[in-house]
Length: 355
Image: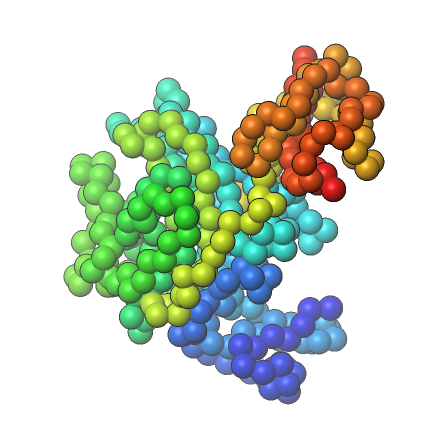
């Protein structure tokens, strides 16, 4: 059964769950922080779901939902996001990373545009963000905000994007400079955003009041990563908190358990690809390959004649050899490592915790 949730009181929500649905109101408090383990983004002041007995209809959730996107679906590209964990039993790839790290994060792989890429100016991109209201991409008036704040890291410069229904390919964007340590940006107002200019390609919509108009009809808030002039690039994006200006604390730290590389490749439509791994061949041998750890003994089965590497969080190869059912890890320090197994018909990665 789903819970009845309100931003103010569970008790109040229980009394009105079957009443007429209230008009959503703008939430001026911090919208999201991974430390709360809540994967939906509370952009409105009161949030209702279905009634407690799940038999009588309540109001649909008015929270935002995280998703990724890239240039594969509509632009003939080959860039993608990579997640640290597979989907859990609730079909979520977002919740596992919050439970482990306390924030959301993806790796991005920006490949150079392929032949036949859309338009005269090939463009590669990967993005990660959330719908403003529900999973239906409804628009919502956020003009009452005094701007946005976000705490993040990104290997390359990124763009904070406000998507409005009438902006098309010319959404309003503000620069998020590359940073290896958590950085807070605050008071990002309409005047800090500019529409992407594609010249004659699309003739950008002109807003009467600049990008301040985009805040009146927000469909989604996104973070976009793009290669300079379509150049290939790889990196990592982390989001620790996001919300109205003045609500972000700037708190955020990179988890010691965070893997050196992520393995679950996105499918280009907000989910994880079947088989689930970056640069992994979906084959019978791969499906049968298994890595298990018992005490300080690592077993790699179903990967005959394959080569393995054990990589630290700092990216250092600390042990390597031919995959076998008994690999001693007695000389390793306690910690999290990535096991990589590669061979003629197998290519896989798996995180292990050595105690």
